Amino acid sequence: MLFEYISLAGGLVVLIIAGDVLVRGSVGVAQRLGIPNLVIGLTIVAFGTSAPELFISLQAALNDAGGIAIGNVVGSNIANVLLVLGMPALIAATPCGETGATRNSLFMVAVTIMFMSLCFFTPISLLDGVLLLIFLAAFLTASTIAARKHRHAVKAAAAGAAVADANLDDDDALDDVEDVPDSMPIAVIYIALGIIGLPLGAHFTIDGATAIATEWGVSDAVIGLTVIAIGTSLPELATTVMAAIRQQGAVAIGNVIGSNIFNLLAIIGITAVVVPIDVPPEILKLDIWVMLACALLLTALAGFRVYLNRIAGLAMTAAYVFYIATVYMLGHTA
Image 1 (spheres, rainbow, N blue to C red):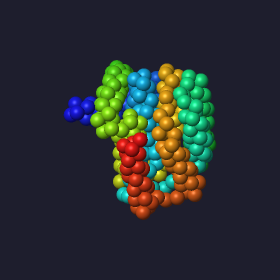
Image 2: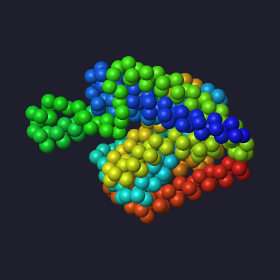
Image 3: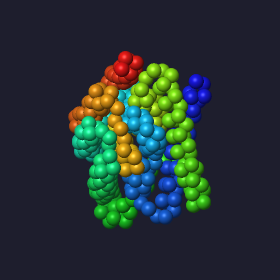
Image 4: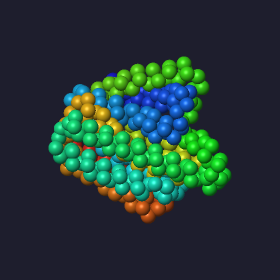
């Protein structure tokens, strides 16, 4: 079984690196073409950071491993709330009052309920995928309009309307993307490496995960909900932990909300357009309900502008550990 563990771990590493390289290359090309930073952030960066989850779910669905395809998304959304927000709070208080967080979290809850409804009419079909992508387009459009209005208002208040009108593109919009290539040829090479690495990493990850699930005596859904979900959430976790260390955790909740919306609309939507996704019965019994509870918790945190302290962070992290233990216990008894 050593090869299967190496395949799983190596595949996840390749996915994370390839996704990061793809984002940097895509941003480099977009900037060379004069595309506004705001548009890049809401589209290229958002899709690029979700690329590992997308290729995992797509490869799993093509391999008739629907449990991994669905489990990866559901598990990632749960991990994003309880782990990605919980652990940084152990380091420093995390504010949850980011501008627009309440509005976007309510949309996330609505999308979560819609996704849950689709799950009960398994498989998630081509038409379901198109519906999810329509909602994704609406979300991107609304986010673009809201972001432009907010940035314009901030600049107008700080420097006067004339200065604000001169440049509506915020140079700080891509602060989280480092080492963007300066030349077009290098950026294109980055994109090529990312496009090659993502499906390769997904292939090894799925092969290793399905073999380990068989060896452990659990379903592939359990592996998708736990090992793969945590693995694909590591970039978000690392980002929020470093933000907490630098006392810059104000945007953490916005990143989590955006990631969860993209997971449901983009990843499941694109995957379902390519191939129908079978939803395992065990996910309908517990996991999608935990995901909904996490979405509601996130909405409450945003609505009441809560500051997550160490006690709250410990409670959320402990809740995630309890959830993982429950998933494995149920998986072994199923």
